[in-house]
Image (cartoon, rainbow, N blue to C red; front, side, top):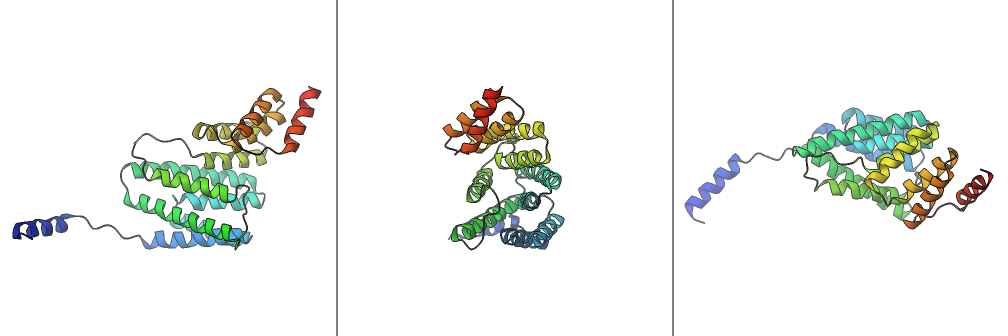
Length: 246
């Protein structure tokens, strides 16, 4: 190589900022996150809750730790706590999106590490070594993995819609808490992010049926089935009977 080229290369390397290594807090937070996921799938609810909370204490914007905590609360029927956990997950999403818009390396690393943790979790589920503790199972994991991967290439500074998986989870927590209007709002938010999401159409059908809006419920059942979602035959039968009575 020409001497001038060598000198220029040396100067460039000297001037280039070193890529920051992950902090001890981040590494520990990811370790707690993975332990939380593992304990959750083994139905070790207390241990899973403690691990997710430890991850959040170390890294408050770790979305999947908040989400995992919400899953634990749903499984143990602590629905108001689940609402709070999923709201915190949404707040973390907003914060992380803003940080990545400014090319924050730590935020990007956290995103990539969470993708890997979810992929590992899916591998365990597919292998049968652990049991799916959520209604969506691998489908729910696929949805979250796809969303996080898509965010790698999000360059616009405009805030994207809240991911459908957050809105679906939050809607279900509100539903179990008895707040139909808030559940409806979140399911509609999920459809705003993904208009073909059969699960959201199905859940809206339930809300509409329980609030005696039968025509709207029937429309949502049709939309869910059109998307390929298998609607529970009992829901359709209950909706048919309720529509006849009114």
